Amino acid sequence: MINIENNPEFLNSFLDYIETILNKSANTVKEYNYDLINFLKFIKLRFKLTTETDFEKIIIRDMTIEDLKRITLDDLHAYLSYLTRNFDSKPATRARKVSSIKALFNYLTLKTNLLELNPAQNLESPKIGKRMPKYLTEEESIRLLSATTVAKDQRNVERDYAIITIFLNCGIRLSELVGINIKDISFEENKLTVIGKGNKERTIYLNNACVDAIKTYLSVRPHDMDVTPDKKPLFLSERKKRISQRTVQVVVKNELQKAGLDTNKYSVHKLRHTAATLMYQNGVDIRALQELLGHESISTTEIYTHVENRQIRAAVEQNPLANTNFIKSPNNK
Image (cartoon, rainbow, N blue to C red; front, top):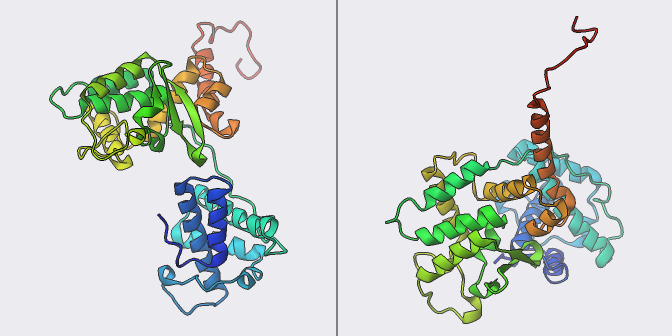
């Protein structure tokens, strides 16, 4: 839950819009709220609308549309510079904040007509260099799965194995995994329904490894308390409540350590990358992968094609004819 009591009315109106009309998730609404609160605090400082010097203590509840009418593109650029200088804000972080600001001003100009001019209309997003996703090799993935079952006296071994198996085979997000209810699984059709970003529902088909792991866990799963049948979570914590994201992160880190894998390099999200990469390397169509991962844009999924391109280059270099040359170039006499 977010505290909206200290927000100006126009901000709360925007948050209501993205939650109810655009169907954004609670986490997304929270991120928008956080980004825009910080932005409005900066505006109060820049326009000298407050005498408060502690940024965290600046009150924005009294801000009005008239204050927003003063904002220009220069002010927005100044805010991005402020983030860089004062918070060492990275391009990806600034890009997210730009997206939040543009969404707010689009709402105020196009949806409510509270503003005539949109100062963010020509605001550009910082360029973000694409990074290759880190992922486990097939051998490392097998090592991780094997290590998860080594300690037979370990509590929750069946649960933890099922968690690792689903991550490595299905590539689902952390939030999607903890949100799984038992009713979301169909063993007749070997499929699973998850709720992804933007509260969008999609189907994940389960292979034999996932089905076996889930059934094994269900055979020893403790009974949860005070939960209605349609809300019974698949994965439970020690307290017999729905497992938290933090607990899953700890489970994955522990299993990575047992497998002798670098926990600074790999994480829950890297298991998602691993699943996607292994599937693409084994011939899964990019469009099918996009659907499986729940990517809104195909460009997000295309990062895995770059991984494959690198491997294709390596394969060419390993051709036994790679160094066979019967003609000398002018530079290699």
